[in-house]
Structures are given as C-alpha cells and as structure tokens.
Image (cartoon, one colour):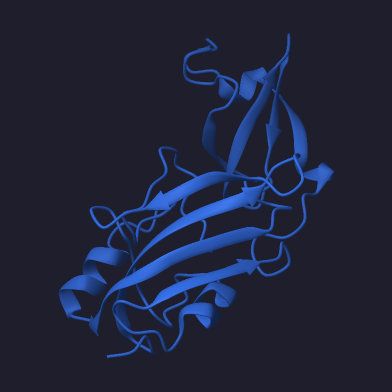
Length: 186
C-alpha cells in the first residue's frame, strides 16, 4: 500500500538543520521505530511540502529531502520578539522564575484570543523577552528517514490523533523533549 489520501502513516526520520559551520548539520529531532511520527495523510496535520515529499512511498521506502523556510515555518521575523511585563506572568501576585525561565516554551494568547507558543529569551528587571517565531523559523529542514507503516486509517486512530487539540503536537509520538511540536507538523 502506498502513502495516499486518508492512509495512516508511520515514519522514522532524522531532522537536521545547517549550523554556522558551512557544510555541517545539527540534529534537531529524531523519530524512531519505538516513537515514530504517525499521522493521517491528507488531513492537514502535516506541512503540505512534507506530505508532497512522502506521497506515493511504500513501507520500507527511504526518503531524503529538504524544505526551505518558505515551505516550512517561514522566515525568522525579528518583530515577533516582544518584551512583556513580568506582571502578566504573576500568579497570586508573585513571579515564579522556575515556571518562567530562559529557554522555556510557554503557551500564550494574543489580544484576539489566538493561542500561540512563545519561547522565553531573557528575563529582565520588569519584563520577559518572548520570541513568538516558530523555533525552526528561518531554517532549511533536512529530513532523512524510512516509511515503517502505511494502512487504511481506523476510526480509533483518527480519534486518538484528534482527541487533544490543545496539545502542541497532539497527533504524533515524536516529541523532541519540548512542547513546540514536531518539525513536520503545521
């Protein structure tokens, strides 16, 4: 069976990005056989360009492709870095530096009620510097992997992948240790 519309797909892959050293790449994320990337093809769970690159593959096929920033998470936009008053992060009038620390990714909401994730870049005296760009914005993404499963999707699999829409990455099992979601995800 080949990867096509409404098929359950499981993949292993290594995701790398270029480093500042020309010709070198850094491993950003790995999906293994024990914890593969699992999704339903064509349901809008994955980046469109990611799906185009695996469409038509069969179990056992390998893949190697790259996605430009435009195909993935866009260019890095400096204006998406904001200084927010520390008061916004207080609970019962107190700021907890363990819950809001440099390097953490936090769920946030903008003034229109849209949910977004922000990374804490810096803590200053009265402000928290937050970056609302996707962690992989501006990066060319290199995927190298293998297809480990393709089958007709079951109602149970659809329910399992869509039951927790509040999660940053509710449909797959390839978390890289943070809550920013998978690189192949939208």
